Length: 228
Image 1 (cartoon, rainbow, N blue to C red):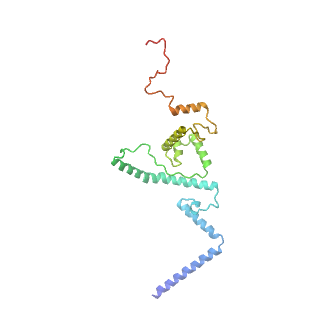
Image 2 (cartoon, rainbow, N blue to C red):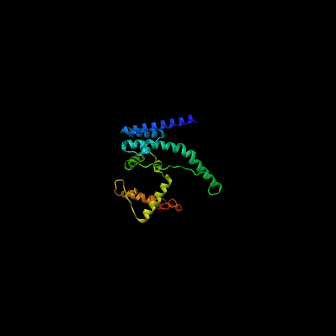
Image 3 (spheres, helix red, strand yellow):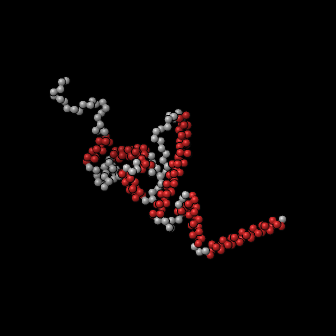
């Protein structure tokens, strides 16, 4: 019993000495504690694959270039996890099971619809103006397909096309022409020329397409020398 009491007292004395030494080091070190804490947080960020500002919330030493570079690397890591693990190992099996259960209940067919895709949530842009301008240039140059550009914002391309078609129909019915409508307003802000507007109207109304029940030579001029 005496030995146990002695061991306990020794441990208490050692713990008190360590606390006193730590307090003395923290109080007399000046800015060393802040530097040590920062290094510890940086090491934690490296170990978890995050950026320092995400772990500590400290942006005092960050600028636009460093913040953007860190976000790009972090987003690349997120995409690897999303497309390499979460979607094929978690989301897709859940979708397949959901479809199979619905098919057993007779809600839809047994065949999985073609073009099925899983779109993860979009990342927020660091500089929306510069990022959008660069993305438009990449799409117009053919470097990035338009469905992939739309998917970068967390939307399905087919749903976006349907939403744009419905929005354009509502605007046309209301007689409105917005500055963001490329059918009627050019990139410079001026109205499209008459030929462009005529082509748009023909494509929208189908005026240039012949009727299905009309004969092929219905609109041809009669030939006076032809035998009836």
